[in-house]
Image 1 (cartoon, rainbow, N blue to C red):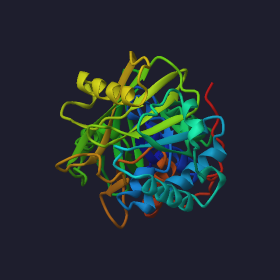
Image 2: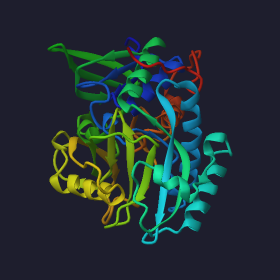
Image 3: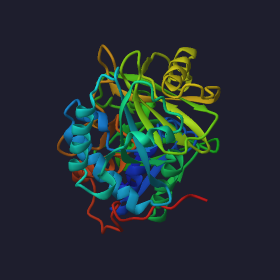
Length: 391
């Protein structure tokens, strides 16, 4: 029997799929990525556009996640300076705010510590005379304003840049390619997919399911059925409003449910998000609801009264979280990997994860698959490979 054509076949062209393709190609592995529609067509173009440490995760004691995210932020600022840039963030504290100024300061101190006390991890308390210059932020009842720094990106461009890096290292991309089925063999998987109206076959040592919200649909077409678990698809909606923010981003509480919501500068407009609502239908049916749009408009007008809250655009993405009752807001955002065999995994699925941590997750995937992969000379390191803005 002839050898497999590939060492790694990745299903899904979002940020995690392209991240795995880059990591595998950098490790010298023969790699193919299949994407059904377009790179970053799903959640990877519908995020909050942030490369951030996850300040709010300190409240749930996810120190490891925050530390990893801040480390990854530093790496991306270095390797992708044209795609990832620091932005000043403001946290207003009002008389009605659930978290006190003392608690916010303590959280920012810990955030800076976990960020290695780098210059981008520093923060300050803005003097009262500077409040009037904050894009029309409501000052009635305002007690304090903290400024710190996090990073912003164009998530779709970043995804395309990661795939371009993978291709420079020899990875192949099939797009638009519809994955049909795969079945396990003694050495890996044989699979079928459709490209340009023609059904084709691949033979691979390992198969990576990075299909995001479609992960269970893909898993159902793998034989024998690999391990998985029940998930909730949690919808996050963003709205784009007319008008620019000149002083940076704002991170404030929703008055109704105390969730943290971002108000961000975005391509000459103002981006507000996000919501958290369990999506019951097919992933492709995800769309903003009138209630979500109104919720975000009300939050915006609470903090920026008198501003224009006319919606210019609205869109929604889906997070894949472990199924659980109650609010999605407090659930872990850790990336979960499942494999078909703990000793020599041939199939691996990526559940959840965040834009910021895609590179670390991809390296973890390669470590888990190593027993099934042949030794090959590495071609580079993903924490050093430059990511360039796609043309």
